[in-house]
Amino acid sequence: MELLFIFIILLIFLTIMVVVGHVIWVVIAALIRWVFNLESDKDTPPTIYTPPPPDPKAQRLKDLAATEKQIISFYTDLVRVGRTSITIRVTVEAERWGVPPTRMGITGHGELVKVTEAEVILVAVNDQGRPIPIRPEGGGN
Image 1 (cartoon, rainbow, N blue to C red):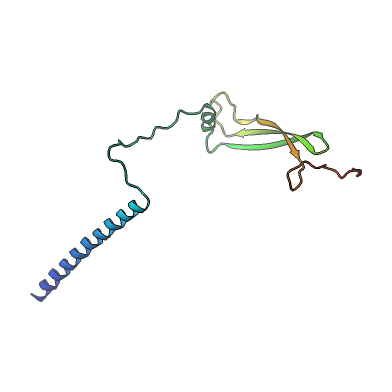
Image 2: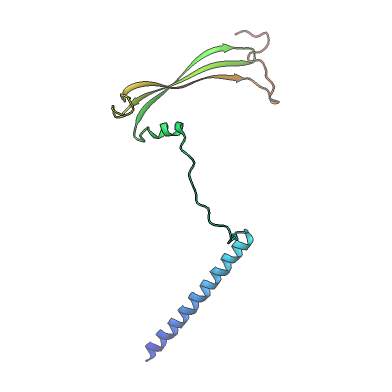
């Protein structure tokens, strides 16, 4: 009889704790919604995310398998040395390994592909952002 009484008291105590805990969390959630103004307008329907149409350039990148092995090479050529700037041509090539030979007409067995090229102009500037001479005035080399 005594064990049944303890069990009933324990059950009542646990029930009260669950109810009080739930009330506390409801109050905390209401405070968070109030502080951060998270009240939603009940008249507006929920919005459904629609992804943007695929970009053809990004689609080409998706065609490359994650396991594809490539050797990337960067080549530079000095185009011009001016008084305050240097112009450099940068060429990027990829030697592709591991692509199945039948995919997109790529052999995939050491094929050398020109990825991109650019001319980069580097300008020497002072603390105020104004161009300054690369070499000291009247200097040698």
